[in-house]
Length: 257
Image: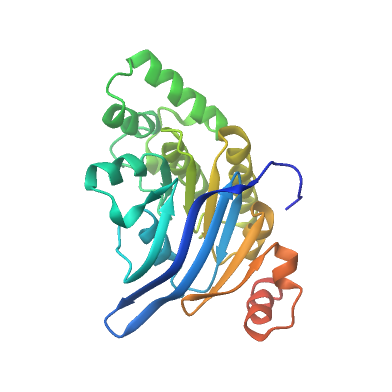
């Protein structure tokens, strides 16, 4: 990703993780994770399936409790928050699910309006409609407003899922395997959307992926996870200009198939 195209404030950490551990019985999933996400930054967390990426995301938004360590999100210690305070924080953190998580019985417009109706009860119908149209235009799918999810392609569903997450204007976006199951052209379109979302909505983002093409396209820094620990964190070139076994094998798996 081209550097210098977006301002990143390295003096402001919107997520700060220190000494994070998480086990399920005898399975040690996270083994001492430290990670910073800076304001305005896109950070890709890379790793094969089962390395702890999704568990990390769930701990960040308070769906799982760590065994040890601290998670500070937008200045709040996630593990110390009451449920109302945690719910308020989650409104500032958008989570784009791998499955898109759309309601099948609702049109695209209704899917996008739903979070607004649930969380911003003071908004008028006109304000909701305007916000929905603005987000649909931003994700490049204004023509789908009256369609049902069953009528959409996989790539369109992913974009609408991102749109529904954006509708509340979160400060942080968490993307879970955004290009999973998509063809190369649609993946490129989605990568461009993730970059555009940051530019247009001033978000900071963590992108969970095992797709190096996605990471290279969208991320200012990448963090490679293996067996619950980060092997290396830096720019894409800094991380992958190495002959270190696990990192090189991960690179070769993605780019020599």
